[in-house]
Length: 297
Length: 297
Image (tube, rainbow over all chains, first blue to last red; front, top):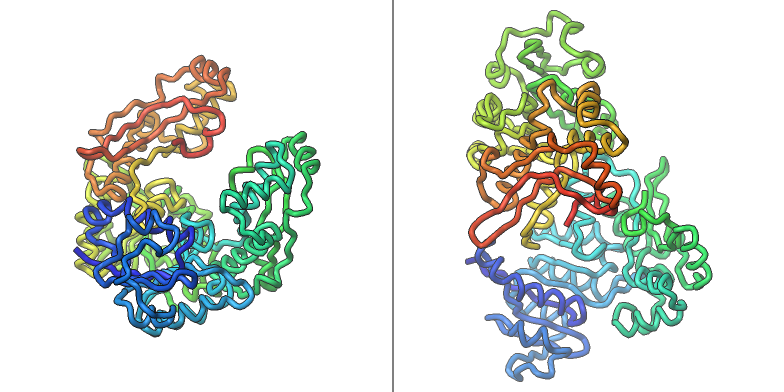
């Protein structure tokens, strides 16, 4: 049995989902894959750092919002960088908050982990959209890997499909619904909610942040478009330089008028190879009935 | 520029499509990938063997049905095994006819190529459905690879998606329309053709063989189900042991009756992990409207 030790940065929704998944698939990993994951450390700027080289209690963690129920002996007086350096781990799971302007502090976390010879897996769009080439080079130089499949379309292997499986087909265009929160809001509006009510419901369910602009103004989608441009087309575009229109100006009347023609408003991220580079945009688009659940052409 | 030399076995539809693709993507491969493909040899039991270590004329080949317009100096008195051994090549592209009972002669071709230290890429279901483990072991022992993505759903990365990208999700069930010819026939019947007329049209277009039983009786789908069982679930099932019903008993009346209820007859290949192994079948199934173009759940 191969033991793989994980150090985790951030203890929010994605972290909880990841831990839940480790619990559910434990038998599968052991019996069919021959390995076992331990989370040896978690650090979160709000709750501090906990550590156990033999593995933290996953079931207790998944049902906790913070670390208040954790045994005092588990706590360490480490900041994130110290956790990366000191905690016994093979892989650092970087799940801190996304900043699409600077990528920090996640870029620093990734650099530190790679320099310490630890693999990195991140769902954080910042470092990947802004500094993927540098981080990939750093990983190569240190004999480790950086994984970022979760940054675009969560678990769906959207990046890998393009960069590995379909590489030699010569992809020329990518277009799709890349943000779940806006999709939820637009669907609620099709069911009769106003934009404001739909947004409030998305916030209540934890899909949208208190400041929802990252989702509804299309910044999140722009970050994902930048990642696709970088990984699939090898082109660096700053998320803030991507032409971008969000959904906050779409009214219930717009949605109803579209529905009458069997059309559906969706926030689309698009990128297309051109003679001179890559053309990218984020904007609401009306799609016909059959295409609303699939990637439009 | 890295030159990759290919030796090709079989000069039918797939071979022509492959050569066409090499021509169309030549610039892409050179400029963006940094390599160039040459086909140095092609052997076909009907037309003989041609060879040029500096590359055969692809444009002339793609517009030829056989080798009758090839320069006499290109011909070699080699059978397939001699071509594999003698022709300068890095990769053998195995595109001979599928035999799902024995896998031969393709199994022999693959073995010979791997033993000669040449990579193998095949679209032939026989060797993969029946002898994948052996061939993969042989490849490993000889420091080369065997690729078989084309055996199921042609270019769609159906196998790779399951074996690489989605491996750790723990796939438990696979179901889908795996045969294009029967799908064409059933679609023609929805447009009013009888089964016989639709089959004739499929034969005229070169989709179905003169003896169409491989497609319409579900043997081809069973071969693909066996490949999926082997590669995704690690379970060996002989194609002939898979429960199998074809489409030859489906009448125009059946198709019309289904259409009235917005249902569509489709030939489905299915496999499912169970406590004791893998449950597999091939049979016509009625699917509701929205699912006819997608993989049903």
